[in-house]
Length: 346
Ligand code: XIL
Image (cartoon, rainbow, N blue to C red; front, side):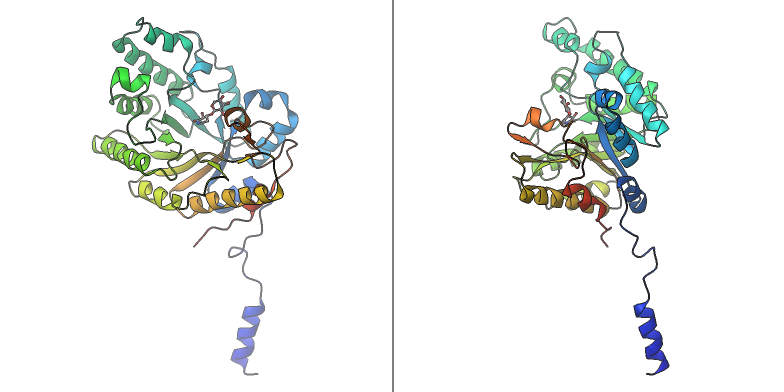
């Protein structure tokens, strides 16, 4: 054999350098580091306190956390002027100790508002002027409390309807559409370092919602309002087609200069669980991570709970469940292994 051919044969036979083919990560934390993104989960504070195995998995696997409920308005201010920060503080402190960044969820939403606020407005005891002051104080108080400790805030959540109109929430009907810009400005003033997001569901595929959300972002940017990111909740179900255009939708927002995050990924199924459904679910999780990795601006993928022991799905979708990466006993499902095997697409 000619020396050149021998040399070529040797090169081809040699193992590829480690950086070209990193070994399969042992867990999600290692996957996150290898891929240069953050992998997060929603956290159930009662489980964090009460279940040692839940705590172990949470702190081993994840580099980002979101409070599933603990930072919502009804949780932090159940009575007017009575603030309860215990759970939210515990989440932030646990994150610090375990090198996890935090997503604040959420400042302005139409759900899980305290009764004093909704009934106060409905009964006319809180007029529109006062309502605006209440919203400003709420945002300022909460964002300031965690200044420097929250990487990203979901400033407004679910403000667009399925048909692309603005949601007829208490905020829109009493304050007008300007409440969105106000919310971002107030949040920015309270913590200029925090990345401020607009967050929604069905944004993975719903055209009217996508177009309206894009125009909201452009309009805010044109007016100099601080907005830094778009959150795709990513509540998927295997009985629906995977949203095949998702990466392109992400790119359209990235083109506006926004950071992209998948903020609440879960993949539910109609029960009972079968091997086949678990395989389909694994494929949906794999595709969601692949889509995120295919867009440079996508820096965080957060799942809405990591175990079927604590998932909102059975309580909200009749006859559905098993939406998470781990089962009730915290055993990894095929979806978990599918994530570990994802490579960054070229
Ligand atoms: C859900 C929680 O998971 C439940 O525990 C709670 O009862 C209702 O809210 N979109 C969101 C999340 O932005 O805040 C919701 O969380 C799920 C849908």
